[in-house]
Image (tube, each protein chain N blue to C red):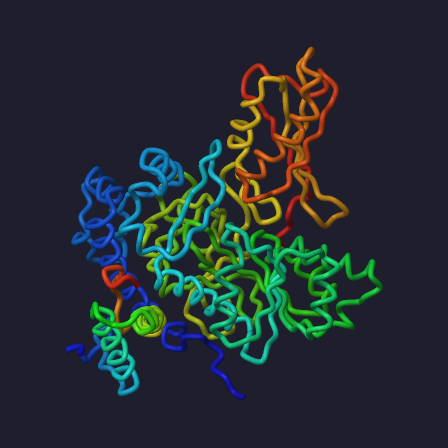
Length: 448
Length: 70
């Protein structure tokens, strides 16, 4: 059957001048909605002297104050459970998800209404259709289906496309490999790291996925590696399949960028549903095409919790739509999300902020010094160790502490496994001024 | 039913687009009724959430539906 190459041919090829007019109209309406219904946004707009009717031209977006993760978290702590950023009655929600916070145990909690949740799947449809997923595909989700939003939206997006969905759920890697083979799966959804783990597991089982599976597409999300050429090449060779990158965030509920089937070395921005500004890091000056800057996103989707000029700290480089041969008029991020402007680390798809880890570790008086050590096991899996020294005289607490600290850290990080490792007293470095308790020993990503 | 015959950018609606808008508006009207049986009330909302995507993607409307529980 012949299909359109685009999920939404009208807007994916809309001339840029019209695209900007559409964005301006949606921006105005979203600001009006937020001003009228979200105390958080109303307060911020008033403090900045901004009124939605001031939006007359695309550049007027710069009149709108930024929204930061720290402000959002503060709002959640002051007005539990969801903060005064929420713009409608909580009883209108049909979905709850969370992502780990920047400090301590408080997570960012999000709610979605019925049309928001449907929109989340819709954004995945743009990306998945663009990479070539069609109703005839059989899609496998190597995903645990927890409260972390992860591939939930993709699951419903694939259902909407009409492809058969196989939820991997909680089972062993061996069980997943077997299912991928026996069900004739054509598309696998995974973090890049876990896709390599599955390949390694298959090898141990004597299975060559590139020859013995029907997989022809691997959809990556949750880690930047999906756009790093060396990792992409490794994945494509291992699976004998095309590897497509996507990126999203719990704060938005879904993906905002995707790699199309032309694989231009970057990810298209879904520009009829988002405005993506690239600004000087921590500043407010726009940077041009081909320059590294910080992503600042405005979403036209989830009205429950409006995200307007949200500073993401993601490091990106925007390039014009003409960089890709697919015919879309949507600009791209060359190399996808390239990294972070802050100290957040992505471990197996989960956000980890060193200061949040420290806040939990410091709840244990028996711990003298500690270090967060991130490394890559067998060139495949990212691991996070908490190396710690027990104070003299507190030895008896170690066994219980090891178990409880691992549990506390996992519970504040969507179930992520932390390895708690005791080292000799005096082994770790001491600091007089600015402490550096984070060591990231993973290989550095190469984009060129 | 809607009174508009243009999209958000002011372009005239094609016949197919007008049909989509009509379905969307009909679902909104149904969702506003308080005496539908649960099987109809909830499925109308589910259908409206989907039609919001089609009409929003095609620039036919951009509005919030929380007052209808959607």
